[in-house]
Length: 404
Ligand code: ADP
Ligand code: DP6
View 1 (spheres, rainbow, N blue to C red):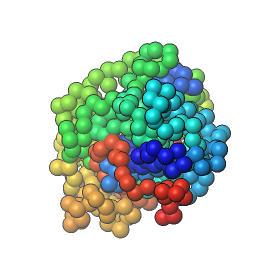
View 2: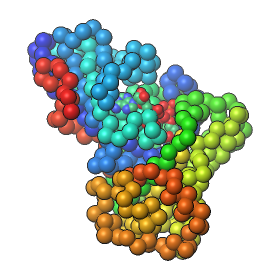
View 3: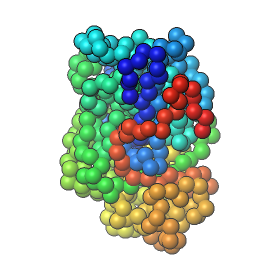
């Protein structure tokens, strides 16, 4: 944290999680402030599996320009309006602290050196931008000793990437669309902490895409401008679903949570198909995952699993820990235990399971072969906490980058 000397290097380091929405953010009503057309809600995923680690540092001795190094590579932040917006907002907050208290070191006047690492593939549809911008905002806010709450900081992170505002908190997080033109009421807030419903698990099926998807920023604007279905979803469908899913979370009602999650993913992808020209994020492997979940639920006789898809073909399957064998056990039997990613902090109970929880003759055979062929990696994780302040800095006391 900041020391009194103006010559020294000041540092703060944080981790931040990925989040996967169950009510999707899709559409902006203001592209500069990054204000959404509808509220959204997500589950924060455990940082024991996926996390960004970011050190923010500043020093009067650094060269004049702010820098960001991501996974060992310098980033062109001077041309990234989003990163610049986050940094200038954070600096302004620090400056107001310094103006009110002359004894504070003038950190706002010093260049920033930010170093970050994602422990999972960047820009591969695994929500690195959400974890990345949340970590950046949290680390700089800590460096500057800002008193703002995570909810207040979400106003800044949202300008980096909309979904990033939900990664500043753990558990179950809503991003309220807000009504004000300046966006001051478009903020994320915790609906329930992870400890309220800690049994929630998420199994990510990583599907290789043949070609790059339409980036979400671009895709959502095409939808806003061309889809007739879109306005109905934003105005009518989402507000009802937000109320219903918040009640399901409050009551830990998995079947209700699951149905809303699946329906909202489907509605979101329907608005993509309704865009002109149409946008396809899901592919044949994604559709096999949809079918698998419906087949498992049908075979079990109750809803034990829910799928959701972001702007890409990867499937995220939510389930409760008590149904691990039925859901993840069946996926493991289909894909094989040697698929990359099974091992890890959430694998313990599943390690000794080799028989499918649901007999494979209850699953469409094309689903089994489609998944076997198209899923090249899994990530087994669960609901988790928000950003955590840590001491394993990626910048040394003298300002050099740590080589990992
Ligand atoms: P993803 O599907 O992984 O979110 P995107 O293409 O939407 O992929 O976002 C990737 C972009 O997010 C990167 O090019 C970078 O600008 C930003 N980003 C990712 N990780 C970080 C990080 N750790 N720190 C800062 N920015 C990051
Ligand atoms: C489908 O947050 O990546 O994952 O604000 O333009 O950076 P920008 O978009 P981004 O969009 C996320 C879209 C989504 C749904 C969601 O996470 O809610």
